[in-house]
Length: 167
Image (cartoon, rainbow, N blue to C red):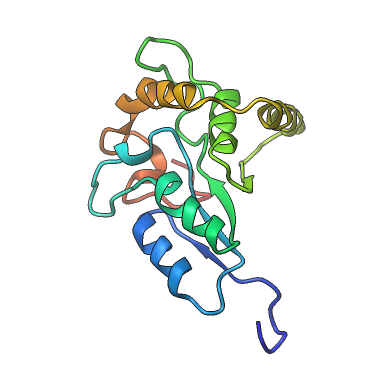
């Protein structure tokens, strides 16, 4: 970066929020951005074949903000949209995107397969920006999806998962 060969430097991780926090605190120069998962399953992630999926919202977001590091979240919908929550209601893309944006991330990266999904997500993002979820609403969503964090339930937490792979 100091030689002008790259403009931005970032971090990406899915397994260890504490390690990402440590890197943001200790790297010099600081990274420009950090990319990590953000779902309402949070610290409910089990230790499956070790890695442990931990809570990025409470661990990484505060230190990233302190060091002016942009935060991009991923996996906000993967394995959750359309699933039944603890009451039998369907988990929606709208509430998952709103949850991520309400946590204060800079941006959310969402895999989309159609123009209609792009339009729907843009409208949802605009609505989420206008009215963030309250802490109580966020905790309620976390409780509703906690049962989906049993080992291997979320496809991207499986040991054999690779992005882009057909599962």
